[in-house]
Image 1 (cartoon, rainbow, N blue to C red):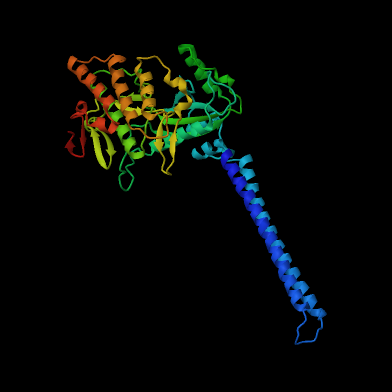
Image 2: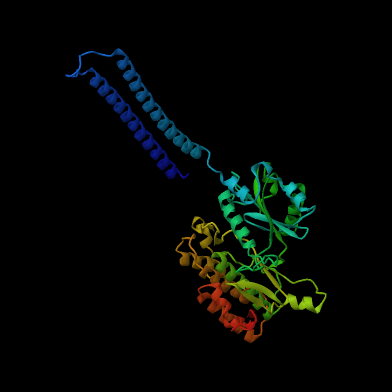
Length: 458
């Protein structure tokens, strides 16, 4: 219960107790009155009968009156005990609410009694060695055995990398979002195809809460990365044995757009199209908004050398499903997109709730340099949402498609032809005017790059 809800609950319990005490007193008074009336009737002389008094009858009436009084008292006590039980429950909920840590542990399919250490999690995953591949303000990224681990400390009472640690409530929202998006993966074994599916969100293998120090293998990997890249994060030795983490275990989605070498116009267009279609599918399925789709959160890979023409043809076809219609991206240019990091995201949950991050609590996010497209996108989102981040605004996805187009033009060294660059510039402008990513799919920039069912897109 919230503090206000608990107060209302207790007030109601007290009111109920008072009401039932009053009812109990009324029952006693009624019983006494009935007994007195019976006694008086027996004591009043009957003009037609002799004026005598039956002592046995008086004793019987007294017993009946006593029985009435005891029954009324027992009923009063019962109501009092029930009201006290209600108050006791309210007090218990105030003192021992369902803890946020317990909620996120259960969301990960774990129990509080079986929270593993980081070392144990690595063993369960069959990972013996890891290497650090990146870092952020709130966590570290490691790779091992074809999997990527995003490790985020949470719920500690000290700052990490200069920031307050993430709360279990914040991480719970991200876990629910990541889980929901994983459900959009195409499942060929499903009896009937889902109305909406896409494989362009990172394949989530596992999400787990852990509690421990950093194991030596991860410390060694952290120090090796620090030696080569000069880490801006705190050394993991700061974490005590009681430290909690949330660990996202995903497939290896490749390099992020910041470091991926985009070779030509076709690859740039394919990356933008796959990203836009994925956003449109999630938009339709659960009113999803990413809200932080910068170039570090779009992973790109090139499939390994293919063994046959059939495999080569399949690699050129990326299939999604939107509103019950199959969308085939038929010109992938040999690249595959995987969208990651849902820390700031928002979507509708199956139970009718909303998972979101309240960006109003982080005003510094909107104070970046003017003219920087990423910083301007945060400010455009705030204007669009009116700083109410629980509500759905599909236009924010269109804003991030605009940002990615701008990134291709201004930050990536792509050898565009004059006509290709002009087409991308015009697309960038139209994307910012769009109401949603679903609208952008139909933009002329993507004409001929995808098919719906068996028919060419318009």
